[in-house]
Amino acid sequence: MKKLFNDAVKEIKREELPELKSFVKWLFIGSLAGIVIGLTGTFFHICSGTAESLREKHPWLLLCLPLAGAFISVFYDAMHYSHDKGTNLVLLAVRDNKTMGINHAACIFVASVATHLCGGSSGREGASLQIGAALGSFAGRKLHFNDDDRRIMTMCCMSAMFAAVFGTPVTAALFSMEVISVGIFYYSAIVPCTVAALTATYISSLFGITHLTMTVELPAAAPADYLKTAVLGALCAVLSVIFCASMSLTLKLFRKIKNHILRALLGGAIVILLTFAVGNYNYNGTGGAMILRAFEERPFALAFAIKLLFTVVTLCSGYKGGEIFPVFFIGSSFGSVMSALLGMPVSMGAAVGMTAVFCGVTNCPIASVILSVELFGGQGLPFFIVACAVSYMLSGYRGLYSEQRIVYSKLRTKFINRRIGDKPE
Image 1 (cartoon, rainbow, N blue to C red):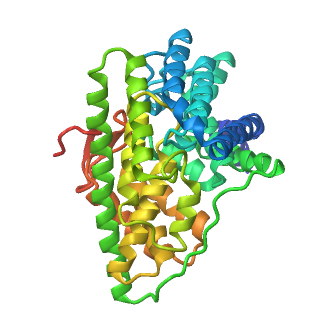
Image 2 (tube, rainbow, N blue to C red):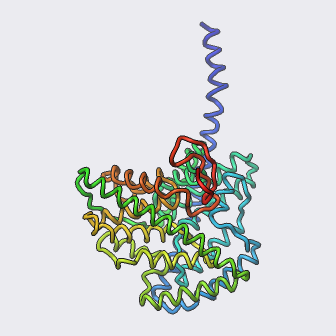
Image 3 (cartoon, rainbow, N blue to C red):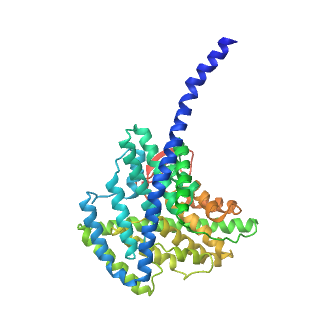
């Protein structure tokens, strides 16, 4: 009996003790990262929000957009990041342990605020992922973590920054683990990502940071309602492909202009002309007010296409920020308009459009479904699962991030390990 007990103790020490030590380590690190990155995210949210508020109060700042683009180009040159890969570098930092550092965080922080100040069409969430990943990668190196722990640290800080800026901690935790390689989750990061995201959300709430809140009118759970949701999910998949293809094509066109300062000047001038052409400022900045409006009333029928154009020109000509919030604008306005044709409540159409387009461009169905729960409540979960499942499958092998890998096929139980944009099987 004594021998059996001793053997059991040895087995526990051999099998369970390393897991316990790792759990305690990442519990502590995740909490600390959540505090530090939560404060950073709060500061970024305040700075970018203040910049956008100033632009709304002083519309003439839009005329400074080309100068802001030139400043961003010169600033990136001075910081030795003129060939920045954007969010793609975040994916490489996790998957291939590519180096990110303080300079990268400073660049995207300053450039995003400058873009928002002068009316470029961009968001905060993509920038927050880059800032969080850069700080996590830097911290991992300074703490002399091994390669695996540096990857986890990078995802941990990505989750914290996303959560602090957008206020959806569960989505933030899952998105960081899901977006890197489509078809697999980096479950080794689940404790630090979850702890960091929850902590960062709490930290931002202490400073009075508020986030989007929408009320959704759900249809009856009849077969016809699920069919309508699936149809809208399919249309959102098409829209997500159009958006990603537009980003890719426009980026190639702008890159034909070798001088990146001239590229930014041209992009800024085009955004100014587009703004004067539409006659309002609804499509500049993040567009948060327009997202909320799409849940209450149907916007102009082509609002989603106009925002798509503004965003593509802004981001492909060298301005910074993120794609996710503009995607929310595009998806919610498109869904709101389509709801009239499908006989759905306007708020339901906006909610389905917002989550399904997000799913289509990021290839993250789990994070997209959880996003719907955090934003709209769990009562409509079956509808959002249908919409995201359809959008994920029909959006094919395109996505916002060219370095994202489709590890497992969307059509078969087959390992394919293809980069976004590669020819599928």
